[in-house]
Image (tube, rainbow, N blue to C red; front, side, top):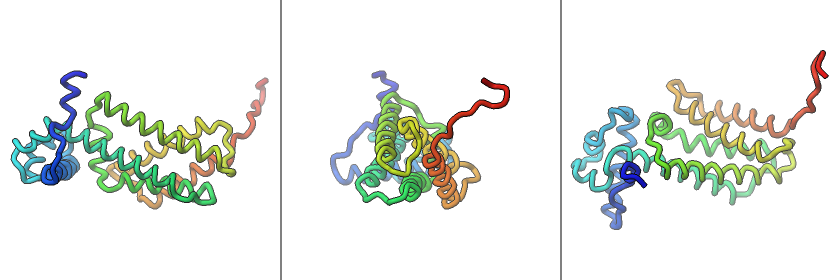
Length: 217
């Protein structure tokens, strides 16, 4: 691993409650600063000021603002993974529509707390190999869970549930990321309703047999 990638790691892993509290203060302050000022102007000095600690204390925990943003991204991914795991162990609704309503609503809730920060994480965050692998692992797990649900639900009519699972997960993530973090965000309830309708129709209508048009063999 290069020194540049090491620069994306926190310096200190807190072992005492007081140290963990300081770390939480830094992350909370950084989320506020990045959301308000953007990434370029969201300096470590502003983060330290917002957290009410010295810049030297901040650097004891994080070498730079890239490392802070990476940790915010990781926490966002972990929250999404935890929410997905909770959905798996809960009793599933009878209808496919209600199952995906729960799925979409959970994803929206995980993205709507701070749309400005989400936009910074998506568009401006550093991309270390470790972070990219974490994102890929999260997507693989999410796709596998979705495919399992599709395989056993009687309302599903698509022939290829592997591709369908990838389409569903990717569509939900991209659409919610884009529309929640947009300068003029879509209302969450309307977004949920339309996205659930789109997914349900795709999964339940199946694939109509292809027929050639006029003049085609």
